[in-house]
Image 1 (cartoon, helix red, strand yellow):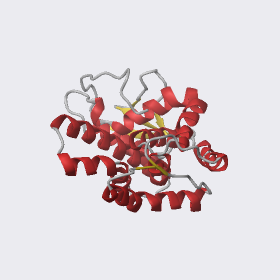
Image 2 (cartoon, one colour):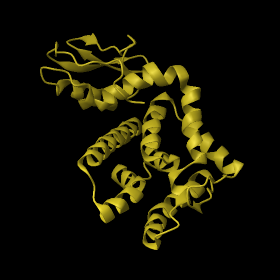
Image 3 (tube, one colour):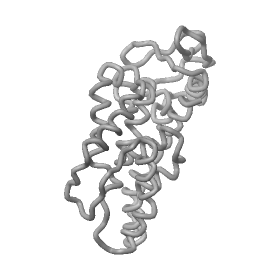
Image 4 (cartoon, helix red, strand yellow):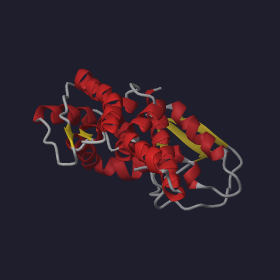
Length: 240
């Protein structure tokens, strides 16, 4: 959700980036003028800490503005321009991961990989049961596992409780990890971002250990990791 679609690189035209209070939040100002989103809406943040972090991204720019180096700005753009107008659809898409959560699909073999998955993932599923009353079922292989309706309902309720800002962060956390449970844990501060990313990469890490990793795959993984950590930082700033 925090992509830079519609926001193209441009030359720096300001000297200073500051924040200012508005009703219900904070804006970022470039030489006193409020920043707008690509859709021409006012760029605003719900907390001062987040606004200050966004302003810091603008201050850090060189002669050319590089959207890729401004993940928090991109996230606010996405929240305002893309998530808010279709929040119900975004919530439904995220909640759908309760039916296909990565943590529920275990390797039938080798035993060492299955054991590593259990060690990394079982505590996370236990958290979902304890925190949200959602007992997800697991199976070996890739065949679809039909989850109990009550478990899906509990996780759907958890997603529905997020406002647009946290929904934006959660969308990236879940899509990048393949796990609604991992996304919720990171969003709630129950799991460190790096630990969440590592948990989502158990299978890939195993394959790399066995066969190595090519440069293209490594670059793609590094980009996804950066996006995951940026989403985790966003939700941490939203929690205050």
